[in-house]
Length: 374
Image 1 (cartoon, rainbow, N blue to C red):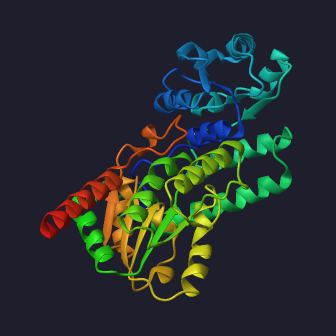
Image 2 (cartoon, helix red, strand yellow; image 1 turned 180 degrees about the vertical axis):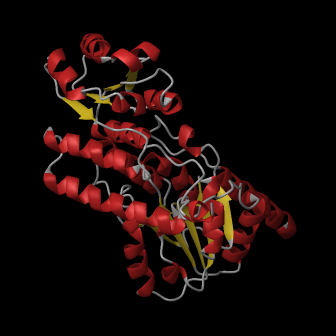
């Protein structure tokens, strides 16, 4: 029994490889995705993807399908989807059920004989790291000529780094991490405003993943506004790298930040969050010491040595990320709950709880200052 306990790794739920594949198909531009499995498989995320314009269909495998197979229904659905939605790019994804019973996705695509490219993603949820679902999807995209070998290798390197970050300091770093809501946002915002008003030197970092940046960037904007632009701002918003949707999102967010008067230096693209620490370290080492830093998005991807001596305010959307961030020495850790559903299908910044709190507190203090002067 003792040896069995020692062999345990992570026992709290982890992200699914199937879901990771679905989001990657969206980023590649797939307009219709067929899940070959039970009707309830990935229901929540399938619904969210519809907000981004992706039609997600299912073959709805049932008990009979588990025994006799679902090849014929899959072929029929492939043809029906082509007829109904007239997409330029389709995809069919495996599930645990279809992979266990040995369904042949490729043969079904051949039998459907469609006149458009169809990405075949032979994936299930049994992989320890959800990034495996992304790699399988990208392999299919490479084989279809949708991305080239250089982009595939680039993406693979980033995914390997992302997996490493999660194992070292993320939700995969401990056998069990209890979900926490983090610090009270009002208290953290009060402390941050105190530092700003005292004239402390601050760093404002957006290091967010994909569409979550639409809300995390609101925090970046709020900090810049509260400091009247006196903090140095860094952002992973390079719109020249990444899959099509990732580049569009980076462009949208960068444009809106600039329209709000927020100037920033680039530290990579939205898919480069796991390696942005290198750019941050280089930036910090070339400047005088900072007193505080606000990190929005994936704070645990930034190396501790780059933030040494700073009072750290970290904002994440992962309740299981609170404890690892505290263990890394981050003094103030906040969670933007339900962030992901709020950033699906959007093209403009979405107000965050911490950003709204910071702005409201700053207005209240400005009102108090005005009253004292009068």
